[in-house]
Amino acid sequence: MFIGWWRETGLALLQCAMCSSAVSALQPPTHRHTAPGRVFSCTILVDFRTEDQEDMCKTLRVRWTITPKTAPQPWIACGGCGGLRAFRSSGKVRLNANGRKLDAWLIYKCLICERTWNRPIFERRNIRDVDPIILDALQSNDPDWIRAETFNLDALRHKSQRVDEFAEFDIAKEIRHEPAGWTRLEIELAAPFPTSIRLDRLLAGELQMSRSRLQALHDRGLCRTEPDRADIMRRRIMNGTLVTTDLPTQAEREPIWKALATDSFP
Figure (cartoon, one colour):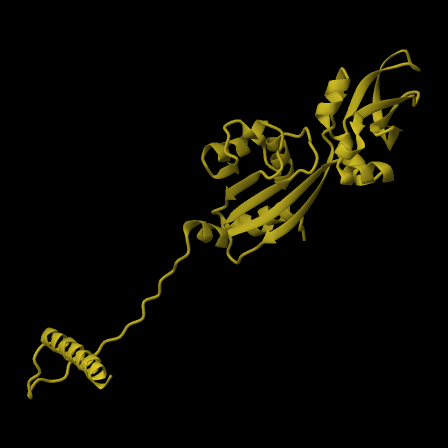
């Protein structure tokens, strides 16, 4: 045991000596009359921010929530009026159970005579196949769920010859991030319900500029959209669209653009 310990200790001492010799060989010789070298120290500051983070630090971010005031109105052959008439939602649903099968309709009324029309939500559906959240909303006549269903354009167009949509809307503007010295405006569009308003009409109306100037900014790359499509300005607004505008002129940023983008007028 003692011999094994001595052998391991000897090997460790030999390795240390070899390392010390190697380090000494790499160092320059030290003379008695050589002045000690000066030691310099410096601190290097590295900014690891990416270009996207730089842009975020310079961007006033706002969110616009656009909500149509009037739900779409289908035109249906009205038995009371004897012709095609516009119908609007009553805000009520009708359920009919037949064994394990369930029917659900959204009740509409004629604008002239108030005769009712039942627009199918689903028919002959097994109760087990109905989402419990939807079933609860139907049984309780949940107004939020029903309002969302009144904007189901595909279902309306499938059952009616014509559907009227309305451009009037409410808009809520909120600041999401406001850095000091911002030079860029980013507008996030939230559209919980389908709306017929075009993007260029919305921006031109809310930012009080002509559509031709807006299109010019877009063509010059000063106004960008995500998704980036050549015809996006002429299309309906889509939920989640981002509109980013560069604002190099300080005189216009605070008193004009911020006030219009956030409805924060003095």
